[in-house]
Length: 194
Image (cartoon, rainbow, N blue to C red; front, side, top):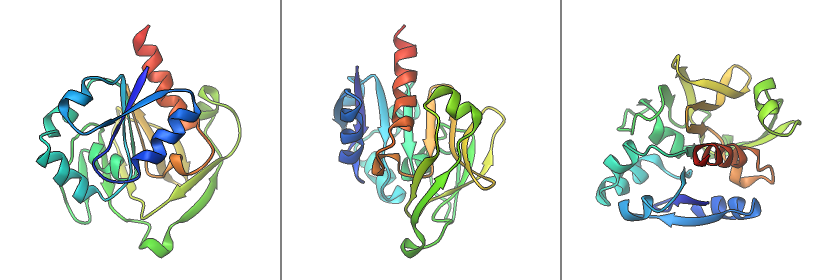
């Protein structure tokens, strides 16, 4: 198994380190050719407007929008995967039926770490215990479509969602020692290989 990490902008190397801790090979993805060589993909956090601009410059938009293997988007990656983005409006890949408001928790100084009690479904599929989440100028999911399941919430806000082979988080799982979100992606990749 080789997991690709979109390496156009953001802290993609932190995701590679997290995946290596789970014993998985990774590959930095910067082209459609490299995208075709991986069994799943992580779209990291970063600055979504810049990331989308580079995606277009590298001719990756169609390949990402049509990517049929398991995928995890975190923070800016979630924004790219959304079907609607506001504050301000911007293009997206429409891979998840969610509406997202960018930077909704406030400026950089409002970023921080929270401890979240997981849902029964999250614990059923992973190890039990609270989840430490890191928000950095995080988006808020304002609408979750009927085909999307919520796996984690912070108060009433969905912060980890999935539909089919796709997962997306408003937080940065690569910045803690908790590897359960990355493991959920690996579980999807393994299920597809069977």
